[in-house]
Length: 398
Ligand code: FES
Ligand SMILES: [Fe+2]
Picture (spheres, protein in one colour):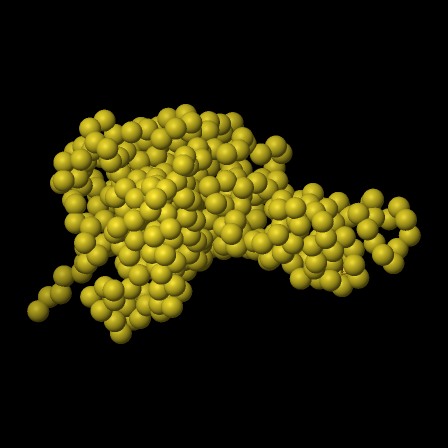
């Protein structure tokens, strides 16, 4: 019997300005991403007088918080004999190297060398990066020249800020594309109960001075808006994690920011910072609910292990419906299933991929301008969250 070969897409060369995935030093996407403030850690994970190593876009740094509370990012290594500064001690608003005691201020200037002559320290400087805090996260700027204005998105108003961070073993751009992909919600998250199907005829994308405004509508009839801030932030109203979606957790939907930040090309941090508008008189009860949720999360089997078992055929999604991070597991399974860095030359995009196509065109426009030395669009900070016009809830679900 004759076999029929499946249709194959010829392998297309991807131009440099369409390589979104690689962000290490010297890459075009990396150069573009470094021109924006990037979150590097949750504020609550860095106590005063502590230093920690961080890796952002395949480069290593030292993050420390002065005794007075100011966060700073400086180079990974001491310039004397190259040990890592993250094992040093914080003194005041400076960090002292563990090896021979050289001390550096938050901007990277050497201010003391215990065993050297006076005057040497003034000549020694390491890299220091502008560092700020906002919506429960620490941000740093790694690009050239003056950083863009900060913050580029409005703070929450009067609720409780809950910042969470997950390390996801997939290229960041796959996660970022996933936030533009409305159709996946009905399928990837089917088991977890998110069934509303998008009406794609109602989906529009509009470029604004701060980013992209998406309007959409699902089978439940509600119109929704979501805001994308370049290059890697989405602001949406989303339900809280399933385990928090009950009494004392405030309104059904929460203002949320998601930031996708590369650690390296195969891993990224997914920061999810939400505003829980819990009424004052319910905050004590809610604190218990939230603590219990965090405890269950900490005790649960790691999401990445569960996702790996599902991908290996040892488990099914149906076996882990009670996992406190079911939604993330469902997303990791779909995206890791593409490969840790998906081969975009092998895709067959359709009409329903309009969001992903819009995103890629926007990025390609800017990356091409960067590659050719032309001016880039200067994005303005977003002043306030646009609202959908017919409902209390303007939302997109991930
Ligand atoms: S290596 Fe840091 S002081 Fe010598
Ligand atoms: Fe998802």
